[in-house]
Image 1: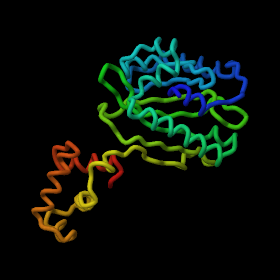
Image 2: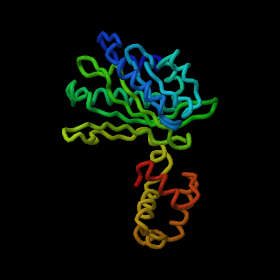
Image 3: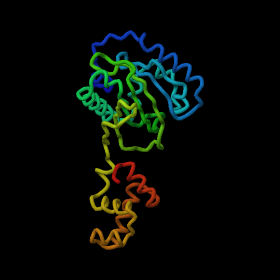
Length: 255
């Protein structure tokens, strides 16, 4: 099954949608689009029923370097074809999981109060990718609350290198405040494949401000062994120093 067919299955619905209900949203976005300065963020209205984008802001080209008209003409299948091949199945799995979770926990009315966030890499050249952080809210849903038309806010983050793929859902509560109701990290190869249990212990103690000798005393190993672990960690994470190592580990959820 193709990636797009998997996508369609996730959002499959018998709902009949004419598109007239969101024309006011589209018009207001066009007006706002004329006022916003160039930036690394852009907005898109996603029509899952028809597999197209009803609106793409002009900042799309500034942020990504890609031609907006290509995505207007070719729609969602074209966008999916550019998500990193190592991440597309994870991303589709996230959509499936979020859909199953949210429709089982929340009523159709409550689903319209949810904000969905996830990240992935998008191809902008032959071997060049950018990191995208995507937020989606419902504009139109079917009678079961399943999204039909969504408003997406996209930000270019990081430097194009792989990041842990993380998904979260926030609910707009009665106080009109967003509270996190779902948060999960996927495909964390950095932790699973590279870092040993002992190295994780060293990182944890480094984050607490311990020096080599204190780490050695706590772990009942020599200071020389601690230095070896630290050197290996720098190499594995391609960090230049301990501060950079700790930042990377925080991104990965290790500390």
